[in-house]
Length: 320
Image (cartoon, rainbow, N blue to C red):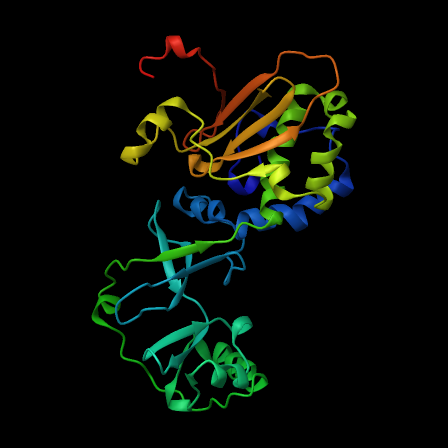
């Protein structure tokens, strides 16, 4: 389990003498940093008091906005709150242009600001008095001016805005978000499941040719995403499935299980903070000698302990 999602005992189920140094460095720099900073699970860790070394000021894969009211469309960034167990939303560095046809502002972070020709073509008012910039401090203001100038937009005058009462009073404001799960995130979660299988089964087992496809997908991004990774799966725990319609859960920890599926296919299920559940297809039509494979662990966020997850026949469950 990447340490950005917590440190657990015993030993965080660390793979020793199994992952090569080059791969380990690559995953840390290219994959796990995206999981921790630019996934919805990376945001969820703030809620559980897992504060990152560096809080990102922008996201590539996550967009959170205010959907209605006088601040409609403003982009916000979730960050750690001083109150433990809560997430605070702060305005991103951005510029708003008035869309004349609907008389509303659309907001753009610096990297997304269109050129002056695109703004005119899409019916935006580019007069200086109709440009709304949100920034903190002189340094950010100068950066916005530089970017706008590169896009052909003249912006010199700054008018102080009188913020709405709900902002001044620090009232709760509804936030909606869009999550884009790209291949980097899929490979990162697949790596967790694959490494778990290596920990349980041993490196000789997972070094078989049967696992070459998932190995190449995780390390090099080869293959089609859907052949290895499926999001939006039902909760892993039986009780969570029963309670899902009520919005309740048995545990808030991480859950990781894997085993045979449809005879000779080996699949794993992963849920970070028991939030979303992802299915990872480790191998298809295993060619070796079949052996019993069924394992699961729960990473308890509260106690920082790792405990085995037991599988029971449906006949023994209190309700089905």
